[in-house]
Length: 171
Image 1: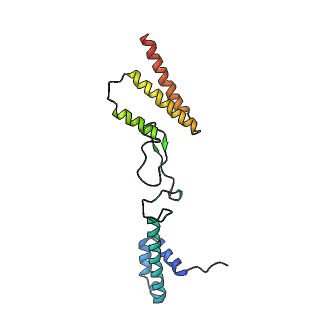
Image 2: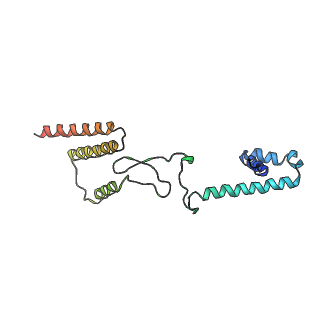
Image 3: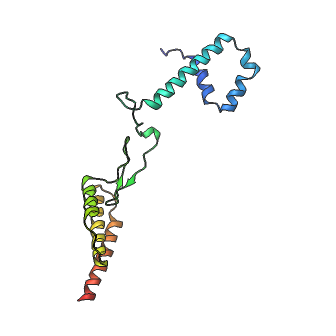
């Protein structure tokens, strides 16, 4: 047997979903004033309850009921993936906290080493070698994730072919 709906809450919810100017026009209308005072008060109380429920929903998004940064959930839309600053792999945004900059501790460590290593003038050959390594790493990650590794393999092949051509020129 279904429970009888709370008509006061239903009326308050309908008023809340109206555009503000339409809701105000209704509340100022003679039809609203014809509703018995007791019923209008019950709807106002129900409206206040809805406001409190919505406020709590905005604050209380964690399972433990703590007040913390709201978690991104599937109902709020899929989180936008970022890109790893080390290898360029996609990073799914976590529900709370700061956005991740790297996809793994290995990428974070590699970026740290690059930042802290004394800079020297790199030749075009070094640049191509780094491009081959990065593209090969991305392709390996794509194969592991069972996604399309073709574009990364293509970049690795092109950079390797350029590197081989440089080698032939110097020989």
